[in-house]
Image (cartoon, rainbow, N blue to C red; front, side):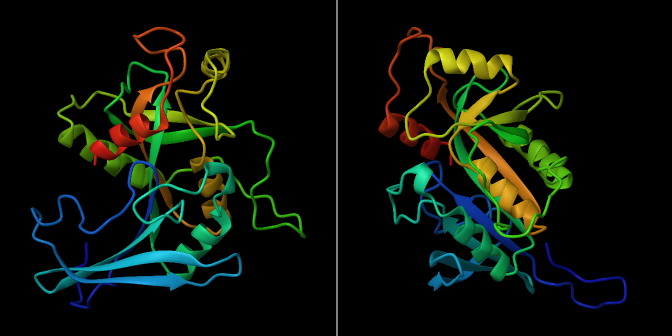
Length: 261
């Protein structure tokens, strides 16, 4: 948070982009901010123009004892209170570019996922440490000239470490409990089959979802630090205690994801 340098100069106001989805449909207040002494001083809804399309942004200015912080909230489905745009039609290019143009310091993405691992049972929130995209669908800002962006570290290590530490605290978990997971990108909008989930596990996937790694790739191309919080909303197909063929319902999954926040 803002403060002063050793020479007494004021530090720059931090600007954080928050990408919401099924697990975070809207943002009017910042969870935990009031307890930490922060108050929302101003809230504005704007339409941010980009070369890839228009993006609705909610801009919040927070104030505490002479310090300010700015949060820019973007619902990746471009919905107001409801995730109406299906995942395969999300305008990821416009979303990421809107944050770049808003000059945020980092993007914090909130993602609802199906879980395959006992380390992250439904109801628990983890952190993406790696990702697998076998969809065969390219996601890039560089359509004309060949630009090869390193994805060796798709998620900002410092942000991941801070998030893991805090998530253990708020979830009452032991300090040794690992919360880092590998996210497997599925094409959607259908949920996975049990056989697909079995294959995903064998190939290293620990949670499944339909959006996030596309954002991470574009953020990396723009040199933007990126953190993904993974809300385990349900057991992936075939892993439910109710049986291998227990149905998944979008409304139920969405409600569980939203409840965690």
